[in-house]
Length: 104
Image 1 (tube, one colour):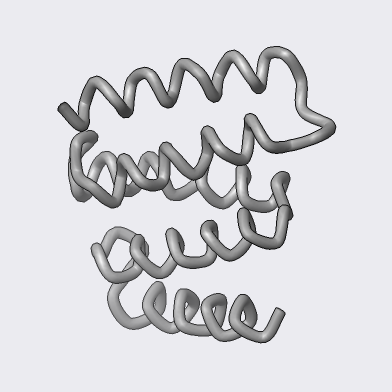
Image 2: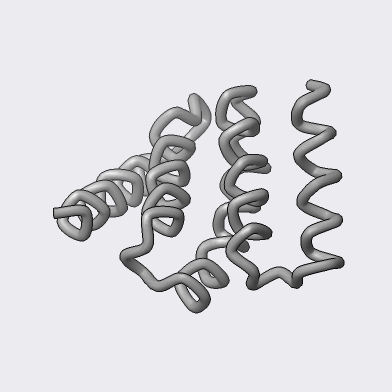
């Protein structure tokens, strides 16, 4: 996917120029995660998001919209993965319940 290649390039440049903890870099990582979800590349999406979430929580805060969006994306990937496990589905439900509470 050409868009994914471009998003990866932008992310790499932002990491180099702004650092991994900059909000724009986190947003670029989120854009990649969205593309991976759309392309149903669940394992890569889960790995990227699990790497991004601690940075987003530390930099932006647990209740920041971008942090919550990353968590929602992870839940979608966990729930949508056809080869997923029962534990993955339970984790997805737990994440979404938490996100809904924090968005109120």
